[in-house]
Structures are given as structure tokens and as C-alpha cells.
Length: 331
Image (cartoon, rainbow, N blue to C red; front, side):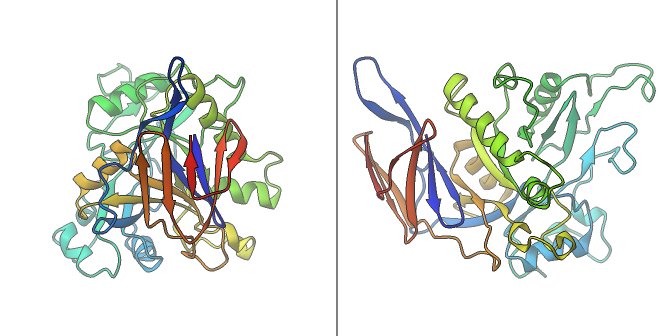
């Protein structure tokens, strides 16, 4: 089940299932370990092609981000700008800062940098936050012999990321030869369910179909047929938060975000929140950014009553149908 907070589209996720001869119950609460009074809301960008560009990194800082992915395409033979080695830490690629901590000390909002890449696994793309090992798609034209760090299809890419400490997410899952296209993949942590890039493509007419609607359809299918423990994240997939779309459709600029609920600003804590599902996907489609509603708390009582405290409006959606518009859902 997905929960939308109306206005700018925060997505809260709960795992709800039907036990034998019983009503619907909450089987997993991603927010059970959150201390709503003391935990930080880390505004994070998990897919944006800024590479090791310090000016773009500072733009994320100016846009209010607390966590920023140091990322670009990687392991894609023949791609003109794809990385051919691990680009980490950021301080190794910028002048004047001996450590990442020294650079972050000069930022107003940024607290955490995230190692990340976008891998081209088979026909699908996979982002790999926390991966610190170089892997690559195997292409005989570039690599005469297949090595252990090569993959030839999407599943092998996912497995290599996981086995080497990364956390695989399906990037822009829009390939839909069938509604079950992604159901055969295993081992990924989640998928992108909103992308600024695809919002712009649809708004501008560059695409005749809505890529974000496709992503939601893929997610719903996975939740119903594979597992309820598949997380959905919001991303930009652009070239930094100030990418201006040629001045058009400002509402979709910098509109895909993820808010992680963390105890501290460490990279380890960000990973823990992503692993537990203690975060919100955000569609920030206001002309003025960061005006989305605040979620003050979420509580679950007796595994059947979910209470959400927020000044925003709430819609509970199950199987594509709005089942309630109250801040309290009694299953």
C-alpha cells in the first residue's frame, strides 16, 4: 500500500497484507525505529549526473540538500563520458580540500556525500549507492576476456553491486514489454518511482507517454506480485538542481527528491535508513521549492491503525483506489 500526502506528492510506504481468515494488517512498519522528536530529515539526491563537479555540488548545497550523490555513468564501454574507475572520495578530484570533511565544512546544508554510479546492466540501468568497487558491462570489443567485475545482463549487474557492498536500485524502470517485465529480477533494494527528467520529457512533448506513470505501474505490480519490501525513491536524473529546462516547465525542475529519517549525518546512517525504508519519496512540483508538507509523526497501533500527523492533506491508495482521505487509517 502507498500513502500520498496531497499537494506536492510525498509518498509514504507501508507493508500491508491479508493474513488467512483475518483482516488487512500492517506486516512491516519502516518507521518503527524513527524518533520523530530527534531524528534528522536528510534531504537526499540519489540520482543526478553532477559527477565530481564542485560547482554543481555547491548548487545542491544551495538548493537545501543534506546528502548528495557523487555520481555519473560508469562501466559503460563506448559511452563518451562514462567513468572507467571508482570516483571516490570527492576530495581526490577537487582542488583545495584534503578531505571530504574539509569540503563539507564549507557548505551550508550538505552534511553527507554518497558514492554512487549509474550502471548500464543489459537493457536496464541500475544505480549503485555505496558501491566502492569498479564494475563494468562486458563488451568483447573493449575487453577481450570477461573478468569477475564484468556483467552481461541486468541480474548479473544487480548481483555484482550487492556482492561488493552497493545497494542496487532500478533506475527509471520504464521498459514494459509486459506488466511483469521486472518481476524476474531479484536482489534489488527498490526502484525509482518519480523522476524530474521524465516529468520534463512528458510535459514538453519530447515523450508521448508518461514515464512516471509507468514507474508507478511497475512498482504496484512488484508490490502485488513479488514483495512488499521494495522501496520507491524520488530522483532528478538531471544535471544538478539548477538545470533550467531551457526556462520551460519550472515546476518540474529539481522536483524528484528523497527524505531520509536519520539519527546522525553519517554515511552509515543514510544506508541504514535506506535499508529499513525509513524515508519518503517526494515530488516537489511547486514553482517555489521545498514547500511540501511536513510529516510530524507516523504511528501504528495494534498492527491495524495507522495515524499520520501532518498539516497536509492525505490520501490512502490501495490497488489504485483511494480508500480514505483521513489522517487515520483503520484497516
